[in-house]
Length: 333
Length: 297
View 1 (tube, rainbow over the protein chains, first blue to last red):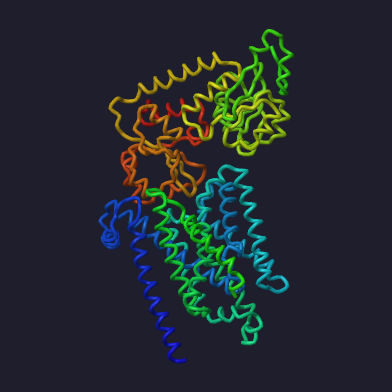
View 2 (view 1 turned 180 degrees about the vertical axis):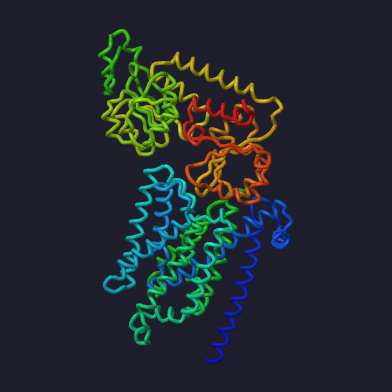
């Protein structure tokens, strides 16, 4: 017993180190691939040598913030997805059913059409929309006691309602088409302002999730067991919901609705290291960052030298995986 | 003269027996053949380049798909005209079109494909390329529209005038001009270059410029990194209303490093005239705009 636990923890450590190496290599790759030819070594050099050359400016003002956005958004979405799946005990749950993506999209599209000359950036509207979408879903789902099924159903209903409103605005107004690129989920235009926007939310959200990871594990066991263990279920639910909102709201605000990261990553992680959320959450953060950083490299290769939205890449990877999950649904508990 | 109230071709019988065959013309359009008879008086246009063509031939359409922007229409034709809005170009209102009792409808081959059959029931409808049209196709469309309006000779005259205007403008371009040029559309969240095969790209080439982005895809989204790699000598920016991505780029030192920025060769291009109208008159306006802005002519 003691030995097997020790072996498990050392294999987890191995896995963490391997993932970390893959992650760091991904960062280098992400920095060096792009329209302009800059080698990995040069791109790392330009992080420290500020010679004002065009290559150095490309690295420090465009590619570095973009890489960091990939890290923050990937980690945030994956942790939000893991929390979501634990809370609803539904393996197909992802931040999307909290209404945040649809809410953010609606607010951004509406702001462009109604307030075209607004001095505020679309990030603020996206955040407000994400919060509004999440709040509506939460209010509907929690009236008369929240159950996982109620949350999933009300989330999907609100998502569809908000999405159809967005569609209506786009159809009725040409300037709504402006956000079509953002709506596929893109990080290629990221700048330092985006990094400053998302970093605090991402760090605080993931930090809180890690602190409360023990309670999340209990939540995954179901209400009866959790109550038996003396947990305040409603308090934890509200807290976890808030963390999900913070993480997915900030992500969608800077990168648009990037799908499948929150769905995909927690599954892979649980497959590799088991159900303990003390481990699932930090691994999800790391794997989420890896997935998005590499997907972003692929996004540059698909139509080289031009960019494709990274959301398309995650969708290409994610859709077959989603179907696989749905088919195996009976075995997933 | 005939007054066709927009029904079947049997209306020809209202005319005198002799002119019957002469008055009915077979128009070849993107959907095949359409028979138009008489001289259409009540024309409905569902794209802006068709308004340009019809107005150029001396007819004010009774209905225009104007996206509910009267100002845009005023800008296109140069004066206030009396017409009824039939809604947006993407979703024109069939009831309003029908109530106008048109005798000719000109629709876009791409946008209005799905409502073609319904339009045809209202009045003879010709479908031409506008949204996806090249410059040459716009000229072809103009000829077709002139034929449908029973103004073929006038159409030929107008085209000859147009060619002369363009040739005169071309002659004003300095012979030793070897800088390359490109136009980009700035939106809130993206920047799209119009390549050599886009409508405005063809106008640049026609004037004798080298195009900075040669591609078979008319439009290409680019990041600031790609723009700095292309680094055009002259950059026209057609910006949407409100804040755009270029406002953000302007704070980046890479933007200040662009050749066009350093040499003061970044110019505004009106979004409507340059990229939305796509007609013969607007191509002249655009061409004049280049010469005025780049050479102060």
